[in-house]
Every structure is written in structure tokens, then in C-alpha cells.
Picture 1 (cartoon, one colour):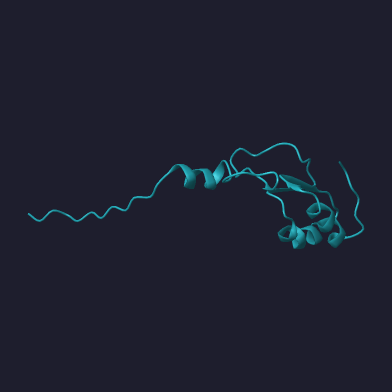
Picture 2 (picture 1 turned 45 degrees about the vertical axis):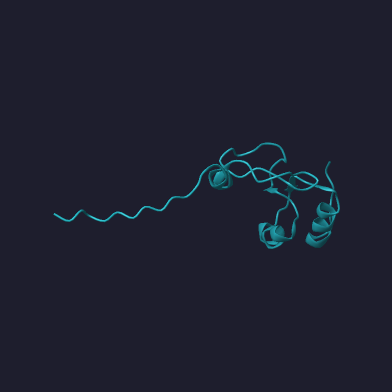
Length: 95
């Protein structure tokens, strides 16, 4: 679905008013304006001047609101989820 907005505040309001938040695609000629508004969007993935389809498999994947369950998949989030941290202390042996 494509919805037009008169300004950034209206676009954020439209995007945040739906019960889902997997991905939002924002199309604009003003990257400065959209960069100032990205933190206001309640969406797991935000694509600027790109379609809402497609995923970069090296980045975390997941949504917000009714579009998500559990931790993000892929990327650093997957690394943190599937690994545990160990601390090693190595001291040279005394002769």
C-alpha cells in the first residue's frame, strides 16, 4: 500500500498508526528530512527510497508491534543470541 503524506510528521503518524511494524518504506527527495524522522518510526526495518520487500541477510530482521515475536534474527542479534561469552585469563608458567 502506498500512502502520500504532506510532511514528515504526517508520514510518521500514518506509519505508526497501523498495528504492524515489520517494515516501513519511505520515499522522499529530502534525505535530511527523513534522517531526522527515522527514530520516530515504530518499525523493525526502515527502507529509504527502496521497496519494502527484500532483506539484507547480514542485518537483524524483525518487526515491532503485531509483526514480531522474540528476538531479532540475523546480524549481531543472532550472534549474541546463539553464542555465550567466555573469559580466559592466561598467565605464563613459571620455570
